[in-house]
Image (cartoon, rainbow, N blue to C red):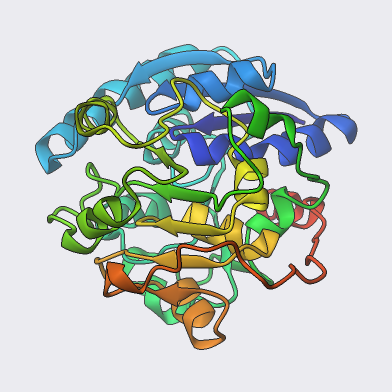
Amino acid sequence: MRIWVDLTNSPHVLVMRPLIAAMRADGHEVEVTARDFAQTLQLLERFDMDHTAIGRHRGGGLKDKAIGLFDRSFALTRWARKRRFDVAMGHGSNDVSVAAKLLRVPASTAFDYEWAKVQHSVNCRLCRSVVVPDAIPPERLYRYGARGKVRPYEGLKEEYYLADFEPDESVLGDLGLDRSQPLFVVRTPPEVSLYHRFENDVFAGVLERLRGRQAVVLPRTQPQREELARAGGFIVPERAIDAQSLIAFSDLVISAGGTMNREAVALGTPVYTTFEGRLGAVDEKLLREGRMQRLSNPEEIPLEKRQSVAGERVRRDPRRLVELLLSP
């Protein structure tokens, strides 16, 4: 089978990497396209994953996103027209869903946050399979056109793509970190996301609380990187790093987005969320179960090394996600 995978954001590289390996091991021919956004291309290079870079992120406004969807979808269509794919897939990629529909190629989509209404209204209507965590009630997706298409999986997607992951201490040396001192990992808010377009005052307080301490801040965009450089007092990697190992060795993770929070949960690291948008079902469940905490007052951040030891990790077979994405 000829399979087309499209990657539009850096977390999607991590999600799809073991799935691509599994599909190729099963004899499928897989080609990858990628959008130039955040650290997507850097991660593909770091993992030595063959890909074709097509298009770039156009901006965070609704008009910008519409232009980006139109331009990149047609660029993908031109690229894929003669390749005769049997199926296309992406993790939240509207572009590949539109292009596949124009080419009459069956497509599947996956996501784990259900309130990105504009994105899902495109994907769910155009794709034959919608792969999501079983924590998301299917009826929340019906408004997007997903009725009869939902393919649920158990647990977190991070438990699948991190199944064979073991942390590597070399990332600590690369960043000049001292394991004897408390280590904090901080992920900035997704400024360009339509569902998170207001200022995050709590996150600003987090930065003030941790300034001058051993805090590694991972920005999403170049303007965020430049702002952090002007502020000073933080460790800001210049390129894509082994963030998962960094999370595993850290004493606390604080993130205003979803993926890094759930990676911390999957790896057994204490984690706070400062997300100020509408909580999705996955985060609601993690908060309810006490596997993640919601931070409302930055002064509550503990500044010492964690005392608890991570328990046994949940590891799930990535082939299960492959089966769902390829299901009719």
